[in-house]
Amino acid sequence: MAKTTAKPSKARRKKAAAPMRPLSLRQGLRWLVRGVLAVAAVFLGLIVLFSVLRPPTTPYILAEGWRHGGVERTWVPFEDIAPIMARTTVAAEDANFCLHWGFDMAAIRTALEAGAGRGASTLSQQTVKNVFLWHGRSWPRKALEALITPVVELIWTKRRILEVYLNVAEFDQGVFGVDAAARHYFGVSAADLSPTQAARLAAVLPDPKGRSASQPSAFVQRRASAILDGAETIRRDGRAACFED
Image (cartoon, rainbow, N blue to C red):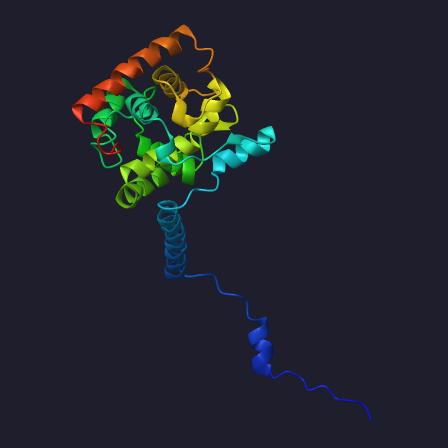
């Protein structure tokens, strides 16, 4: 006996043939808000997680590892970093680190007056960029950095911010973190850095691919000497108190 196939009803045929309606403005905004909230939740989760756990890697370290076929990097806790290294880094990169909430407004005003060639990023902002974002100048990155930095300042301690920064900062091509840098340049651990070695490492931070800590130029030597003076200044005036015992 031949089987008969029931024809779809007219209502079903009409429903199947009906074109999909474009999203309304309200629906589009609703999905946009949901997307923004989802991204914010991811960042917030990572910030909370990395307040106690080590960031396994960063976007920039991944990119450099892929480009060079690997990187030198070893994580060390803050207690295993010579105290002078923390002070020289702060003196070199953000002398008012203990005084601001993520943005150094005085430095920003000075940078604006000096023009676009001068930077005003704090250690907190640099840590956010290194851990969560990408390198390069762009308004989207700067906007995300401005949004994330206060949250990091709220959840992390100053000591934690500095600890993470020192473990993800680039000190030479493919060399990340202060322990890898200490071994790469001087053959010692981060705990055994001398004041001069620490100052030279801090001096290469703004231009790690163009400066050397083990074979310093005259500029790097002068810069390291000034950094040592600055490190002693912030120790005496209390601007190192937020990360030292």
